[in-house]
Length: 367
Image 1: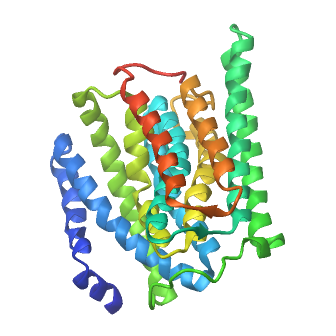
Image 2: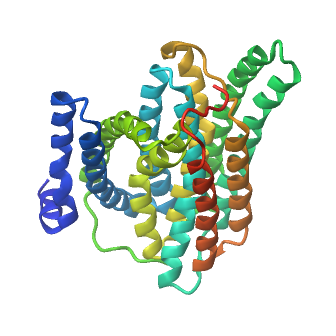
């Protein structure tokens, strides 16, 4: 605990943790102050992301970059899962689907691209274990193909299309979760030697004891989940005021803020030439969302949603996810990166963001 307090005292960014209790109090006292809640939530997520970054790096020093990246991606996606569950319970399926597709694209293009760019600005050429990147990219591509199937079935039979798409989505949800489990077995058990990190990279100095790091990870993850839920509820009202569509809010804004903690770790690791961890976080998180979070939400919708949710996304979202998946497969094939590759990935993401910004409020894809 002394190490944690020392870190907070010596890091001005962590002084912003004072906004965490403030936003929780304001949410209870003035729940309709959406603009204030939006600003406070953003100011709270930033220091929580920094604290999560330090704790995860301490765990990674004990477990290795591959498992450390997997742990960070899992905790980061737990936040997004909680956010999506809240929207699912409210029946806001357009926002749920937009946040799922947006999280996949944000992680595989923006987070990966920014990691390549930030690391490449410091190191001429960076290398990473391409086996991990290729496996995550392949899983992501397979999941994207699964997202195409319900829309294809719905278009074949207009009379029974929705029922067929719902039934198919349920089956695909079980299949994707099984594929995710087999991917974990392959990378962490049967062929774990293929995913070992190289010796390159900075260690970043002495980390926290494993007990303190894990405890901090758990507590901060819960706080990020609470603050992110407040952020989502306020950003929707802010979106209406600013004239933004639900697609843009979910695809861009919610995805970026929801991934803030993971981005902090991935960017820090890239600057220390620990690109194995950055790639593991970015593509591992994207594949987890596609293979676990999205299917889990489909199954949970039978219990907590007003009606079952399917995996039928609107065509534009599926197209963007497919492009992001294919691009990830392409850029991770060599196991080497430079700053320009990262810049190209971020340009693709910017094209998507600009396109969605033009979507008028009230426009919806299939729900």
